[in-house]
Image 1: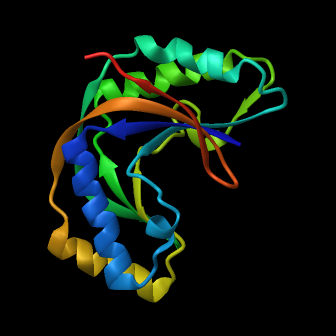
Image 2 (image 1 turned 90 degrees about the vertical axis):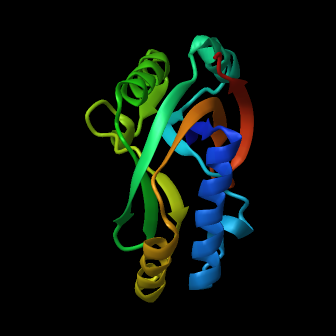
Length: 174
């Protein structure tokens, strides 16, 4: 599987990393920190039979502009994941649609059903592979430490999974 993810400005990324670190400290679950998973929002996940030309196709996305994001809440994907939720504003929606259009035109690509239009749920994973007790501790920690923040999406990344490996990144235009 391949992923295209959005990355945040330095201030926003640092705050999100503090949330990740706090959850790891309070729960004892260090999956995110042990695997050096940076704060990000996955925009697309897809399979493809022939990855030739994938990086070149990804690099055509360099015309995408930076945009604002407001991260306002915390939620969970039961039973294992706690995440921060950005508002699905016009920029985030258009970013997801634009990337879907660019990825899905390749005949050898199958976009995951979770990243197709009207099926994608924007989220920023803060803790993963949490058991029931760890999830409760993670929420307790976020009740104390979470505060809404506004930031900017400044970069896109293309990665392989299992294991995670960054392939290419693009700095977005101001």
